[in-house]
Length: 243
Length: 275
Image 1: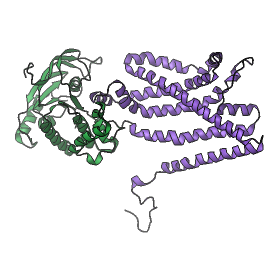
Image 2: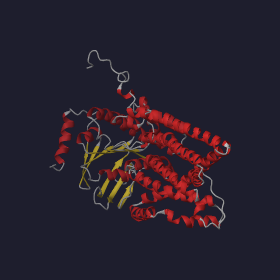
Image 3: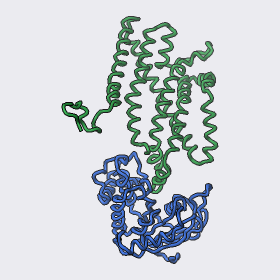
Image 4: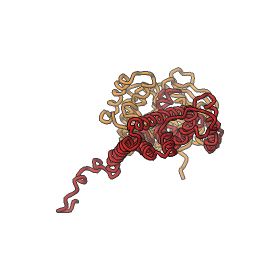
């Protein structure tokens, strides 16, 4: 466990509860911290509360109880992209800049940089409905990066993509993480994905944090490497048996 | 494989996405032919009208044109007013689960009260202040309001949470959120609601523009000119050519608006729809 008072921690949760009237998706007594530039992954079954943690970090929801230290400049890549269907790719990417009051042509110019970075130049004037799932997620990532966040939150962004597309996006995401010195908090329900990307896996179940597992494999990681597979299997053994 | 000796239809040789669909061909005909036929119809009727009756073609034409312009202006004012009221009413419903529980039954009840029963009261109030136009607009406003309110409520309900969250995360707050997220998100429903509202408005025009008939004969009041008024007055005075031309004008303008405004807006709004 990290030292909570460490000023290097950009996110700190201390005994945080979030209850919903329905009882589902809540979290109980969540304590963890994320230092700057870390890539951390929350993993667990659907409804265990991992997305709630992201919503709390993003400031989209308020905790019922507990102390939080949150970064000021957070950006989110949503599960289904959550692109605005009425805006073209470039205007989706420029959206956050426009909301900061930046003029349209300047915002578009800045957005162009991220469009190129995510290899979307050919589609910049298309509407989201004209794109494939992988391209949409690229737009989602470009839109999230365009506001130059300190912390990037990803909510199961690759769950609907095929394997080839997924691995292409993994390697782009890792490049961006290193190049921009970002702190990344991702939610995933796939063990391989979590081990491939993150430095630490926080395993959740039944609305509580179960354990933290450091992933001390060097980058770039290889899924066929025996250390990689050992790590995946070790985590699999820790999970409650699925029926 | 293409069978030997069978020449494909020229349109079939185009790639599927470039082939005009049946509906687009039908639309092309409808866009051009129906408004054209109706316009020609109106011109012919107006021509006959001028020649056959009192010889004052200009006067009759003026009456129709003036009536049409005034009616359109009145409907537009009522529509804008209805929109200004409908948007906050719909946003109020969407603001919290409690608000939904309180507001929805109230709206349901209000919209089910036949507003025409208040007609004499509305007319009397506006006659007192000598502004019968106001009564007409209020009536059209009431007729247009609920189609907008209920469509907007539906529109607000189908906005995915992720889209709202994305708006918040990327810094859209209050008016910026309304303008950049809520409004585009409900646009398809706003357009459907507007189409229905204008339909209701046109239906009401022939009642709303002959309000003097609801007043005691002792009350002297300036009548409201409009195409609905022309239609009713010409019918009661036995001027059947004027009646037919007013009828033609109304049908034409409604069809033209449908093809050149609503259909275009509806297909434009498709891109605003969530998948």
